[in-house]
Image 1 (tube, rainbow, N blue to C red):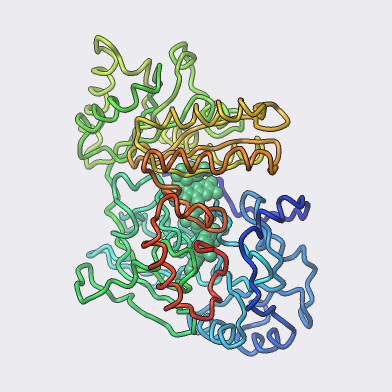
Image 2: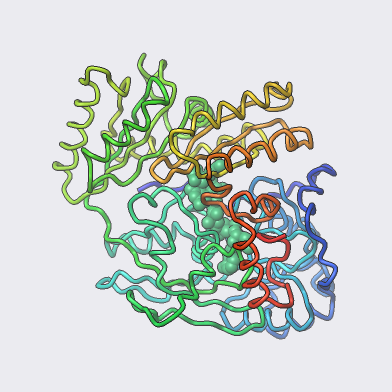
Length: 513
Ligand code: FAD
Ligand code: 2HG
Ligand code: ZN
C-alpha cells in the first residue's frame, strides 16, 4: 500500500494576526481554571522522567520555540499559549498527571499527532498539553480473532506496518496516516478512505482504556467481540475529542488483508454523472468495491501542481469536470481485474457514457500515484494558501450545487480574487455522503470568515445535513453545533460532560461552548 509522505509537521512560525488570535479565543474564557506554575512542574518531576517534561517554566525553562509545534495546529490557524507539554510513557503516569490537574483545576488538552483540522488538539489559552506520542507500543495482536490492542499514541501507519506480516490491515486509512495516532483517530471518530468498506470506528473499536477527568483508569480493553452487558460506555469516548477523558489504549478489530487491490481513476464530463456512476459501480463490483472517492477538476489540478501523484494524460482528461477514484479489494487478482475491466468497457461502450475515460493502475507504482492524487489534495491546498475547511454531510446530488453556490456567494461579495479567495473546491467520500468543501484564501480574514459563516452552515442545515461528517467540532464549530443537533441533544451532551468532568478541566472550550 501507500507509503505516507505526510511526516510530522512541527510548525514553528509564531506570526499571527489579531484575527487569528481571536479565532482561537472566540468563545471561551477559562476563568475557573488555573495556569501551570513552577510548583506544578516540581510535582510533575516526581511523576515523570525529565525528558517527558517540556516547559518554558523554571526549572526546565525551554525557549517557547521548543514547544511551538504543540501550540499550533496543522493548518497554522489555531494557536495556544501553553507553557508546558507532558509526554507520559504509561497509563499510570497519565492518571497521576490528571489527578494532580483535577485537584489544582488545570485544563488539559490531550494531543495525538496534531493533524486535526478543527482546532481541537491545541490549547485555547495556556492549558497543559498532554501529548500521547511516547505511548507507542503494540500491546497484543491475536491473528485468529484479528483483535489488535495498542497504546493510544501508536501512529496509524506504524500499526499498518505492524499488521502487514500478519496479513491484516487497520480498518481505517487516511492521508495523515504518517502522523496521526490511533488515540486521535478514535477521539475524532475519523472516517477516511476505508469507511465505505469497513464501517466507522463505532463498529470496529472493541474496547478502550481511558483515564477519566479525576484520574480514574477505566479499562475495557478485554472486551470480547460481542458484549451486551449494559451501557456501551466506550462509544461516548469515540468522537468525544478529548472532552470526556484521555484515551490511553485501544482494542480494535483488524481486517484480513485483501489478497488483491487495484484502482482506477474515472474522468467524468459532468458532475451529474457521479450518482448514476456510483449506482453502476456498486452493481458491477459489489463485494470487491472498497473505495469510491470524488474530486473536482480544480482539486485534481492543485494536487498535481504540487507534486501529489502524476498527471493523467489524454484529451478526455482535458474535458473532464470531475474525477472518481474507484478501488477494489478482493480475494483473487484475475477475478477482480476482469470485473474492473468489464466495468470500464461497459461504461465506455454505453450509448450515453457516464465517463470520458478511465485509467486503471497497471503497477503498484501507478496504484500509489492514483491514490496520491486524491490523498494529496489536503497537503496541496495547504501549499496553495490558507484553507477554510467544511467537512459536511449532504445528499450526494447536492455536492456540486453547494460548491457552486459557495463560489457564487463569494463572487457576489467581491471576494473571488487572488488576494482574497483563490479557489473553492469540492472533494470527498462520495460513498459516505461526505463532501470536503475547501475555500482556499490568501489569508484568514474576518471578511472571508463573515462571508462563509453562517452561509455554509445554513446551506447544510437546509439539506438536513451535518456540519461535521468526520473532522469533529473542535474549537472551530462550537457555535455551529446547533445546526446539526437540536437543543435536547445538546442539553444531554452538556449533562454527560458535567457528569464525567464536573471540574471542567478536559479540553476546555472544545465541542461545547
Ligand atoms: P489530534 O489532532 O492530536 O487531536 C484531535 C482531537 O482528538 C483533539 O480534540 C484532541 O484533544 C483529541 N485527542 C487526540 N488524542 C487523544 C487521546 N489519546 N485521548 C483523548 N483525546 C485525544 N480525518 C478524517 O476523519 N478522515 C480523513 O480522511 C482525514 N484525512 C486527513 C488528511 C490530512 C492530510 C490531514 C492533515 C488530516 C486529515 N484528517 C482526516 C483529520 C485528522 O487527521 C484526523 O482527525 C485524525 O484522526 C486526528 O488524529 P491525531 O492523532 O492527529 O489527533
Ligand atoms: C480527506 O478526506 C480529509 O482528504 C481532509 O478528510 C479533508 O482537507 C480536507 O478538507
Ligand atoms: Zn475526509
